[in-house]
Image 1 (cartoon, rainbow, N blue to C red):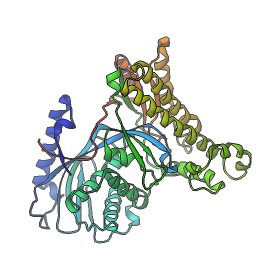
Image 2: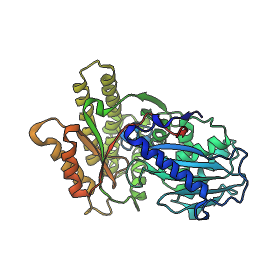
Image 3: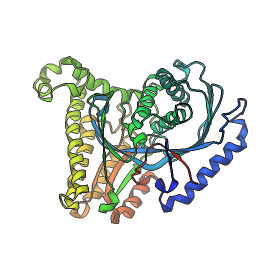
Image 4: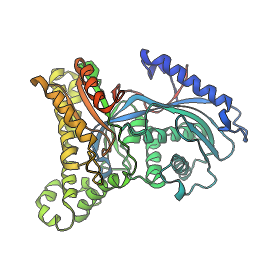
Length: 437
């Protein structure tokens, strides 16, 4: 794996803070802080720790379609998890991440451990198992990390950690030979089989690949990934994430219900996923379908078909924006109209704006309603907003003119607390080893 210069990852305003962050991680690693990284095994001869960075991701389109072999549009962002790591000669892993409990485990047994489900230890063990199954014998490592991709932010903090661990294993024990997609697939399998959260491959692919990518999961083991170019700021818009500060805890059942219900519709017709089911056949047989599956499953299937087409249309709009085949303002207006359609579909059909077990807490729905009101003021075309990522809690995504950003921040943070709004920058690099600080 080639090393990436910090100047490619962090802009001028971020560079000094990033350098201090990596130096702090290196210093803590060297001090063997609080015995968290006991050196009871001799490290490799080349034991100098190495630096890694993995970005978070934002979903641009394709809300809950990947698990039914659909299409998605996503982008990596400037907020990342940074780490310093070194290999070990035994099977022990010591992983420290600022703000979280230290993770210590032995990889002597790579089978799933029931008591680890839902933990970082489960992810690490599952990723190690994925490498072993592919013929790469892995050993342990010591790592010290710090993440800007906060848990519950909707920017895939878990996927960023997974890809980081996969990249560490690959770099130290496989010569850094695996592609971004291969790292993503090993990570996704660990989250599903070891962590216990069924998920598609979008989050891990976006974190590993970098930039804006369109992914078609029609052949799940060999998805088609296309790179696109998109910089909202270049056309006068800010891409924002509004955190409503609601927890994703105890939502596994809500997340799992979406792919299950979509697949129950497909199963009625003898198919394993909605992508394999002809849309017209689905609509022609809704009366019979209702005798077997619930109405919410039917609505979620409708969302899948509409959203899949929207991803194609969004890619067309972004390509037109990049090529200049239409005026930038018109291409952006088309794109943002599709973003809003996606948001409305998630709200009305997919129904992932609040947890069904707690219908009185509707922070996402409130944030969306207030944002729509703001964007509609003065009758000026002003942007779009949508449920972001898995939904049910966490964040919404908003595009708005840069000159309206300060007022939007003032209004939203008065309701959802100071610091709730983050302006995102799309990062063109995915999971990388860093050198040059």
